[in-house]
Picture 1 (cartoon, rainbow, N blue to C red):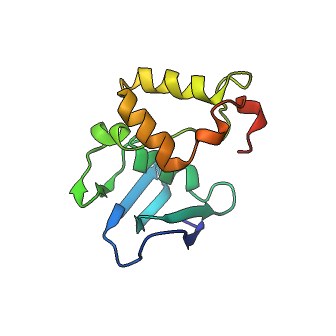
Picture 2 (cartoon, one colour):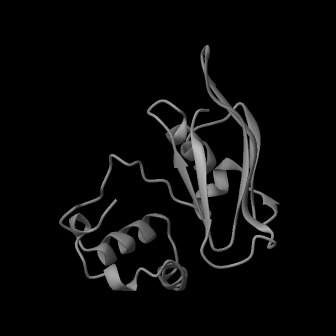
Length: 147
């Protein structure tokens, strides 16, 4: 993969155990190797960015981590426990760059809709909104937000 990662620790400790640990992910499309033994971890308070040219494997990596596409090898751990692809949507959500939900809808309404699809309890939604600091944008329309 030609993509490079950019890491910034906002809050938290790099000594803390990883929230997300990706180990040895590989994905091949026929003769084309899209991901070759990708491993990294993300700790509490850390932001991880993937940077690279088109075709470098960024989207394939995110889809593989989220369990949207199957991988040939490798595994994902969440808070130290193996997380099979069938259970990853309980911990993460993947939204491709080209899709923006309901641009004229309010952010709060979109969150409510997604939570209902995933049957997420109100307390879980409130915790996620608080953790991500989304309260200031709940009353904004999706088109008013940056990517």
